Amino acid sequence: MIYTKSVPPRIIAHWDGDRFFASIEQAADRRLRGRPVVVGGERRGVVLSASAEARRLGIRPGWPVGRARRAVADLVVVPAHFELYERFSDEILWLCQETTPLVEPAAVGAAWLDLTGTERLHERDARSAMERIQTTVRRWLHVSISTGIAANKLVSRLAARAGKPGGRIVVPPGRERAFLSPLPAAALPGLSREALEALDLAGIRTIGQLAAMPLEALGAVLGRRALPVLRQAQGVADEPVGVRRKSAEEGWSERIEFPEDVWQEPLLLAALRGMLERVMAQVRAAGVEVRRLTLELRYTDRAESRYSLDLPEPSCTEDDALPQLPALLERAWTRRVRIRAMTLAAGRIYRPGAQMELFAMRAEERERRRRVAAVLDGLRARFGPDALVRGADLLDKTLPVAQD
Image 1: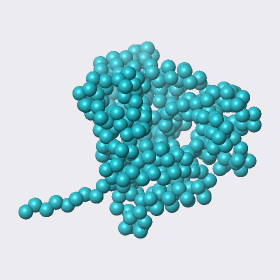
Image 2: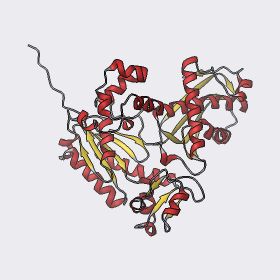
Image 3: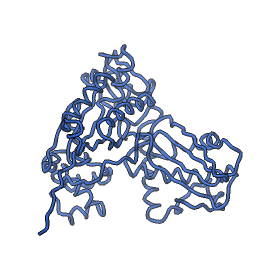
Image 4: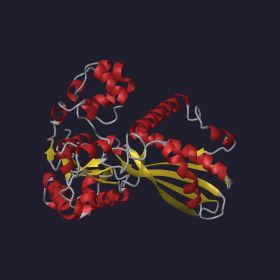
């Protein structure tokens, strides 16, 4: 006789900050509380985040700041303070780690928790655990978060967003598809603008319609992405809550090891440019933006040094980070010793979207750069990483490197 043991469904929670940037500005400055506040550019650009008071007056993220000023005469516009938002986000992560060690940041201001099996340890169910976290965050940090609880990461994240602001939504096991059905197809992660346009042309506008499509028909629209997208639309997702990123500071990295120790700065910068392109391609593939670059050098005597540099604003294109590479190398290279290997990492993860079109550059210019970078990613994926190189790097192709 064969005995089988049923495996209980996972309990995955997700928290998502409400009006996160604007709420933090109000929490940090009492004078802003109760007033309509937006985070954005003083002179040009768009609204990144709008407080509850500003939203009640009709202002939304993505609006040009000038339009928001004209709409609300007493509007308070404050510049973005990304380090402050990151500190608040880390405080909430540390609070979550008191409940479970399995905490994975999704971005600055959002994270997953795996609460499976924690009921006996803390003598409270998942709903009570998340209610406690919400209450503590509101009481001590004076910001609001929304939470979602489900059997997987995808549904819990969408549940948290559906409950904004300040809500708690629980999707019982087996009800994932019913919960997702009325949501717009654009709510699914990983669907490009081109894919959404193709689905719209096919008359597919909700996740329920997408989930009901035959795989063959969906394949004609999405190609190889059809099966994973169909599984997502049906509420099937088995990705674990990982600890690979213990904070939103950690993200993606590239490492190269030189066959011979190197000391020439032009060659090192050429290698860094290639590493940056590969790292940013990973960032774009994940559908996020990053604000921090970290360079770690390993010298010929096996000693190491590292330095981190913050970009002026979150980005997913190498063009925004390329001007920072000489300073990054100079500050990380603390010893006049030949270099054996380099590791370049990108972190401090932010969600993209209208709220990320910052005031330093017009939204249409940032969108043009993103699209160009996406085309280059596709060409390199099809024809190889050396199919396209920057003109400046053609002079530095004499240096072979071993990539990990």
